[in-house]
Length: 371
Image (tube, rainbow, N blue to C red; front, side, top):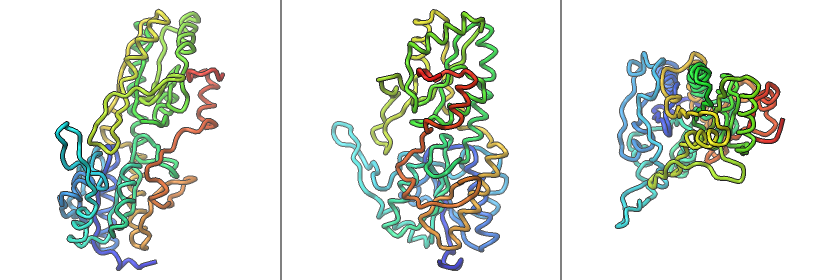
C-alpha cells in the first residue's frame, strides 16, 4: 500500500439524488483531510457534471463549518451526468445524442493535479466512478441513498432520516383517515427496492404495505379493507412503494427522461390504487404522494454520526492507498468493498427478511396470499 504522501490533493463530489447527511460527509472528509493529513480539498459542483464542465472550487475548513445540520448538498448534484454517456445535443427529431466524455472529465481532474476523488452517491454514481478508473481517476466511494438499496452495505446514510420523515407523515394521516373512515394510500420513494416503504410502514403501523419485491393482488387488498371495516376498524392505512406492482402487472411509470442515464421515473401509483380500492370496496379512499418530502430537511442524529464515520473512513482509505473502494457497513462495523461490486446493482428486500415475518405476525397485509 502507498503511504499518506501519495495523496496531497483531493476532490469531493455528490451525485444522484440529494438526501440528508451529504453535507455531514463533505464536512467530515474536508476537515479530516486538512487537519489530519494536510491535504488540499476541492469541491466539484453538481456531481460529475462539474467534473465534465470544470466547475471546481477550493474547500477550506471554514467552508464546511456549520453545515452538519443542513440537508441537501452545498456542492449541488446531478442525476443526468454520466461521463460515459453524456447528452451533448439532440437530433432533428429531438432525440438526445450521447457521447463518451470521460476523457474530458479526466483531463480536468489531471489538470488540477487531483490525486483522488471522494464520490458520494448511489449505485448510478458508483457506476460513473467505476467507469473513470481506466482514465487514471482514482476514487473512493461513500454510499448515499434514502432507498437503502446499495449492495454489500447494511445501511446508507439518509435512510434513517427518510424513515423518520415518512413515519411522521403517516402518523398525521392516521387521525384524518380515522375521522373520515377512509382508506389512505401513501406513496413513498424507493425505485425497485422496498426498504423505505417497509420500514416506514412497519414503524407507522400501516395496515397494508406494498413493496416491489412482493406483487400484490387487488382482490386480496379489497377483501382485507372490507374485513377491517366489518370488524369495526374506522380506517385503513396503505403504505405503497412507487415501484410496487400488481400481480402479473407492470410498475407505474410516471415519465421517461430521454437524456437521463436512468430514464424511467416511477411514481403516481397511489392515486390509481386509491381509485381502484374505492371502487371495489365501496370505502372512500384518498391518496398522498410524499415524493421528495422524505429527501429533504435536516438529517437525524444517527445519520449525522453515520455520515461522519463514512467520511472519516473514506479518508483512511485514501491515506492507505486503497482506491476503487466503497465504504460500507457490515455486521455493525465499517469496512469497504470494490466499487465495481456495487455499480449498477440494487439490494432488494429478501423474501426471508425478518421484518417481513414480523410485520405479517402483527397482521400486516402485503397483498399476497401469505398469512
